[in-house]
Every structure is written in structure tokens, then in C-alpha cells.
Amino acid sequence: MNNSEGKIKQGKKILIIEDENELCDFIGLRLERNGFEVIAANDGVEGLNKARVEKPDLIILDLMLPKMPGEEVCKQVRKDAGICEIPIIMLTAKCSDADRVIGTVIGANVYMAKPFEGAKLMQAINELLG
Image (tube, rainbow, N blue to C red; front, side, top):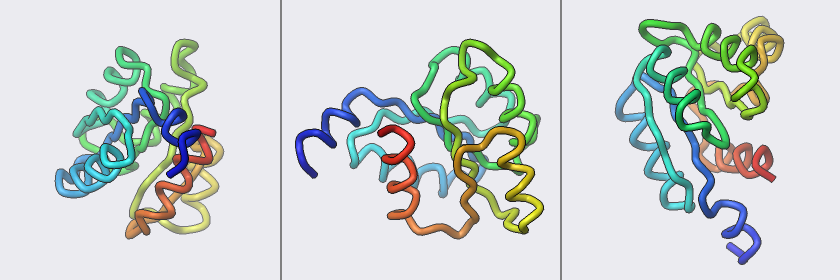
């Protein structure tokens, strides 16, 4: 990693909204090792609330969540003037072409199917955070 990459990541906050604890921990650990601050939520309601309070630099969002589905979380983020510009990576087991189109239409910047490669997730994060 060169110094410019470190400066980009320094202080960048990522919110992971994922109900699978092992996957959330795996992603969170990888992000922390790459210099990001990580916030986690295990359901859609908690995730939306944390997005509004914490104002992360990026959101990694599962679609199939308890309390509020990821699609609704994404729609609410895009409607909220305080957080509507936050990039969203949808990380989900729903991987049909129709699901990808819906994800893009409701506001996802990147739609990534599970299982995913950690390197591809990191690449998408770095591209979105520039």
C-alpha cells in the first residue's frame, strides 16, 4: 500500500448491515486490517438508525435482513438528505439479473452476489471511496 492509499482510508468509516454474524465479522476484520473504521448492525432498522447517526463513508448492505429488508433500507437512505450521498454496496445471496436491476434502481452503487471474493469487495470499496 502506498501513502496515498493510507491517507484515503485514514478515518473512513464503513457501516456493515448484515445479519450473518460470521460474515459480518469476516468483512469487518478485513476492513479494519485495511485501515477502515467499522460499524456493524444486525438488522435493517438498527442499520438505518446507525447510518443516520454515524454518517458512514460507505454502507455494505445485505438484502435479506430482519426487521426491515435491505431494499427498504436502501430506499430510506436515498430519501434522507443527510445520508443520501453515501455509496452503497449490496452484498446478497439474491443474484438473478432481475435482482441486480432492482438493486441498481433503488440506489445501490455496486451489487455483489454471495459468495464473493474478498479482493473484489475491497476493490469496489476503494473505487467508491476514491
